[in-house]
Length: 453
Image (cartoon, rainbow, N blue to C red; front, side):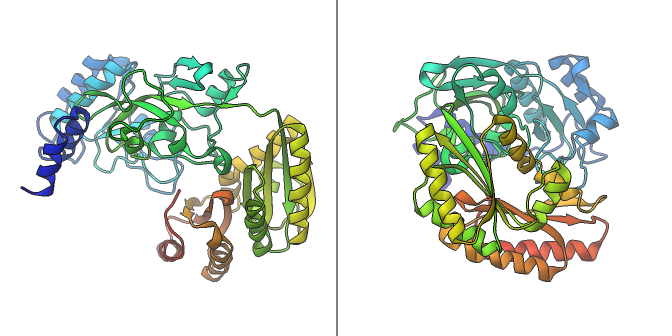
């Protein structure tokens, strides 16, 4: 017996995992049969479309070109690859029936949230059915005493935090876009707060998932929200970051955090990339409890000044934020300023009022659109690299040199507090030679760094 057979035998007592293995083993064994047209890959027959309508109702199924094209791309430079149909389920029962229908006919399923991704993950490369989950947008349960909340896939991070405003709690994971929370689970999203609060991997307690065949799975058990468990497989961790390849996430139980007593944000300019990133490492080594520490090179700062109407120095810059008590913040600010000045930092701007802080972080979160404005008509291509903190100065400086040598237009921004940075390249998708240079740059950057995050 091969290793798959051994694994299936040992997991036979765990029906959820066994079901997952069976689904993975049989996926693709019967492509494009039954309702699917064989004339064009991904084209759906009228009979299959009618079957979709029977599940969710005619108003919630569309084969219109405009709807299909809207769901065939995200914010990335990847070309639109539309699905054969778009479906808007209203509840988990409908999602289960849709999954079973598509699975029985070998039709690809593409889950869709807000479409704010940057990597082409929603492109329907083999056609199929796009399941748009935004109509399932309820906050199902808030448990403030256990610091957790249950949300449906259509709830976005900003909607959740608005809902939590008077509870004394908040959800801190914040990728730049107002992404759907279950989409953030599927992509293992990070964000500016990751240095203190972690990524989605650290903030998901349980998931409700519809498996390919339509079966419903609760990854930590129905209704459970334990912060720690040593029993069984970590199915929750398996689905976080699975990008829709293992199932459709129809609810997520998320960890909440107490809202900080006081918050202060700051920007500080530096004479070089090396000085800014050295400061990051020194601040982390000094064990200052930063909530956020973000790096923007001078190209990105110039773009943000223009796009968000800031007046910051056009220089390599750190954006910082501290959470805590008033007394603790005063000490942290003083120490951070000392370290920054030691590395040549200047033009400090401290923002204590909520409006000022929001303006700074809105500019940071809109960095993607600010970069796109540097070269109107072009598309953005974002690299994503995560490296050990000890190698961050070396690799960022090397990346900056390589970017200049490539002749490409690009800017660097990153969550440097956890060793993660992005190089955003502005590309003419019709220029084959430029695309070749982008590919070569990305491959070289990957060889310097490590895993994306």
